Length: 536
Ligand SMILES: CCCCCCCCCCCCCCCC(=O)N[C@@H](Cc1ccccc1)C(=O)O
Image (cartoon, rainbow, N blue to C red):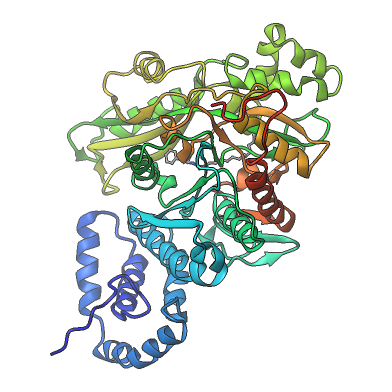
């Protein structure tokens, strides 16, 4: 028998993928509540698979071949049917499986479709070297005509958090549908918009025959939403092995805010010069299980629930003004309406007052303190058994004026405050260093100039990223790391990140392409006013 080479992760060529889909649908409908049930339901549903279903799938082979050949090896309707289905799965036992499969599929769509059809010049230009890192991340090197100039790097990521249609999206989250001038879909803001914006700008500048003087890298991670430990970390490792040092790095993490900061006249472009630290703590309580008819005075669930409640009722202390957000508000002060302009210019006096106002809103509260979010709570196996084990996960984002060590000790000794609650650190890292933003900082000034080229009257100020980005892995390659996407966000938009109805306006997307197109050229300017070109 002649055994042909077979692309194992090509869902449109492998009908077995459809059977996996059938199996998952059937098991999902039965809602297994633990691993034993999951295994049992899988076996039972697998045994029910009909011979005719298998025969039909095998018969579809010739059509699949024809479709793949017609798509020149690209994706076909068989792939997309399966993909669409996967996007409808909810958060359940399939959560991790789903992330993994969706990631593989996105990669598949990305490499096979985008490269050939959407960005032909990028992928065929002799100036561009493209390589896959850790199988799914992309590293581009765009050769400059002056190798003596230090390169810079743009970052974005192709992976996304899950989205469920059950969550009442206005359009299906993976449709990419356009409605009222907005492109909807998971990833449009975080962070496929940037991926497409950067590549479209590169395609365009190459098509125009522009040869950049300063070489640059583009890194597109595939696992930012799960820490970037394979994508960004391996890109950094490769660059380190090659002895690369970067003039500056630009990633997602802040934007142009319009109407979000109350009292500010007009939109402000906030170029984040740092990002918060983070830690996840696992709290757990154990005790022997017992019969629900003879409950102990306190249960694992009750003890843990009380600890979690204490965490929510005792937020970390206010630190407003002691980190880079202080500089941000001082820069913006003169653009606030009276009396806020006076208040903001005198943070040394008014910071505690402003902090109290800002903490009332969940977005601005993130600038005031280390935040505490209880994100997962698991306990119990049966409704008439006292749970022997309860666990909760607490996600904290650490304010720049605090350290990881300090946060851990506060939680351990004062807030949780119950020795029966075991506290384990799942992971943690300190707030990131503050990148320079004075007149001699090339990266900051070039990003600012590019914003001003597009929006001449825009307020531009250093900002702070309240979440985390892949750029944190690059701190050994550059001391100038900035987080900024040239998109305009209005009230309500912050909630679309990881939420429902994620979308980008046509203008924002076009602005993104324009921004990177101009940035590529601005990085070639000979001299900043009174600055040396290669300052880092
Ligand atoms: C003053 C008002 C500010 C309003 C902010 C408006 C939004 C500005 C853009 C924000 C972009 C945020 C980008 C976030 C990327 C992201 O989600 N990263 C993830 C990374 C991560 C993954 C797993 C565990 C820890 C960390 C995250 O931070 O959760």
